[in-house]
Amino acid sequence: MASKAMLVCSEANGQTNDVSKPDAENGLFRTITPRSTHGTYQLEPDIKFPRVIVAKIVKEVVDSLLLGREYEPGFCRQASRLITDVLKTRVKLLQLKRYRIIAQAIISNVGDPNFYSSSLCLWEPALDTCVSYEFCNGSIVAAVSVFGIYQS
Image (cartoon, rainbow, N blue to C red; front, side, top):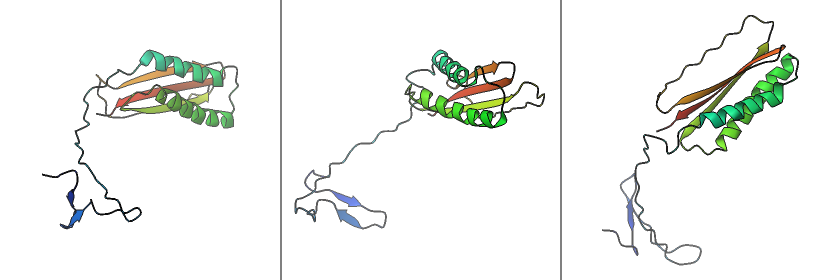
């Protein structure tokens, strides 16, 4: 049984370390109280992923950057990175504990018929979800997705 005044810890090499020795700086004894640890496994989230709120955020971010723009490869490359960064930041501000947020944005020219995309991940249908938004303005086509993956 360890007391508050004297606590002896066993190290990995088998030696013991008396942690209530005098402190070198001020000569006082350090007292370490043992703390209890509990498993942090939580099989279900406290709050489900708010799809409606995230869908509004996605639409707002995409429309603010792409509405009224013409397709330019350099701009679209930067816009796709900016969209994903802003979406991850805004969704993380919702403080969804234990959710991993993944954002994907694909932007292409309307006249380009070669547009392919694929995603693959392990999925728990009861807990994980995805919000998608498609944008088209006559010059730009964009497909944006935000995935909320619960980490149990």
